Amino acid sequence: MKKDFIALFAGAIFPLAFSPYDFIPLAFISLGLLFYCWLDSTASGKRLFLRAYLFGLGLFGIGISWVFVSIHQYGGASAPIAFLMTTALAAGLALFPALSGLLASYFSATPVLFRLIAVFPLSWMLIEWLRSWFLTGFTWLQIGNSQLDSPLLSFAPILGVLGVGYIVSLLAGIIVGLFYSQGKTRLILFISLLGLSGSSFLFGQVSWTEPESEPFSVTLIQGNIPQDQKWKPEIRLKTLKLYRRLTEENWGSSLIIWPETAIPAFYHQVKEGFLADLSKEARRHNSDLLIGVPVADKATGQYYNAVASIGEKEGLYFKRHLVPFGEYLPLKPLSTFIADQLQIPMSDFGVGRDDQLLLEAAGYPLALSICYEDTFGEESRVGLPPARYLVNVTNDGWFGDTAAPHQHLQMARMRAVEVGRYMLRATNTGATAIIRPDGSVQARAPLFEQATLTGEITAMKGVTPYVMWGDSFIVGFMFLQLAVVGLVGYFARQNR
Image (tube, rainbow, N blue to C red; front, side):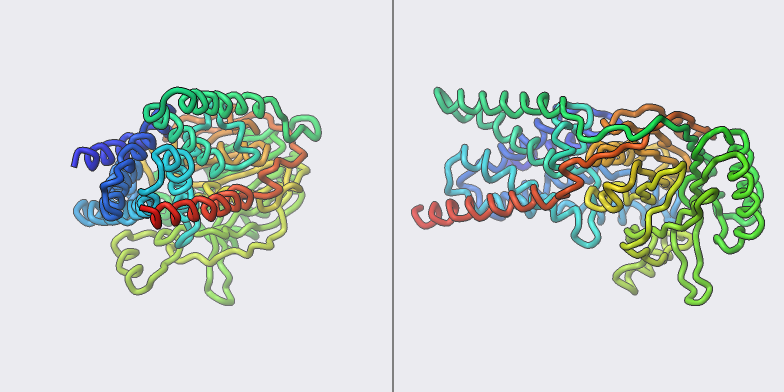
């Protein structure tokens, strides 16, 4: 029973390792406590499943509590309905850590150090990988993202966020193992700990990409349109005038970016007048614009979350990875009831094709993502290495003043590191930011303020190992390891 409470506590402190708190050591402490709770040879598989589930309840109950704000304050659901939906989501997501506990329980007959170093980190990361794609994936609070301001970040251009997470998990197991070992074994573990930490400093000296040309100027516009006002027809003209004025004040920039669905009207409704005039002005000032705007296919009645390129080279990008219940409705008719409760405008978008041509702005091809597409490492590789920088447009106004905008920015920073490119992130209410290829924030606009963020970036060329092989390397390694430890576990159970 004591370890049950420890597991719940460990899960509750896990989110504090992420932004905006950034208590990085808690990633190791939290996971180490969970591994300690799994070190119980007398506990049944159900017990380890329960402990991991309690860990997950703490993790997601605290870590995504902002969902309540999205559903209640901006989705229009009553407080009781919002509480029940948030609780149900956290309870469902907690099943993922629970599965890792169930997997770990299979190896209860193996030695303690074998479990801590070979089994537990693998169990955790295999299920985290599963969570990243199952039912379209939920990538929030992946443990690797907690290391953006630690030396372990140097592994990201090689192994991605999953690889960084695996190393964090392995280090957590080694740290716990130091308390269960002595003599030469403890010395070996300590040397291993130093070796992994030291190698991170060595990889940190490697530059996988390099500037291609001279820097060029960019401006990101943060309109700060209140979420409950954004789609009202009576403020549409006011919104268009605001973005046009802020753009005209920054015509000196080579690239100007508006956030996701900055234009609260369909593309065809503004193309001939508003956008045509804006495009003419952009060409006259040698500027290009990227503008978030929904696009409707009048022939099919389908609409898309899109970004329009305006200026020298015009084009459209359609969002490929949609948010369940927010942008499309799975599991109908259940989802229809949920959508009715949330009152989300345009909650059934179409899916963009995977083979879309890259947009080009400021003279270079770019890799574009909309909203939470930038939380998926594999998808951020699309368009690379030809793309010379990354652009993400989003509207985190749904989250309010919670941890979510900070967590989202943290994931965008990881994408920049994985591919060795600048990331330009234009948002409606924050966090608008210019992110360097090393993941550091070059400039950032304040939350919930109307702002323009201007700076210079450089087109980057070159390829990181992660761009070449994505998650396939670390996932392949984990399955190979699973086969080996699975045999050890099998023979251990036979000889029990």
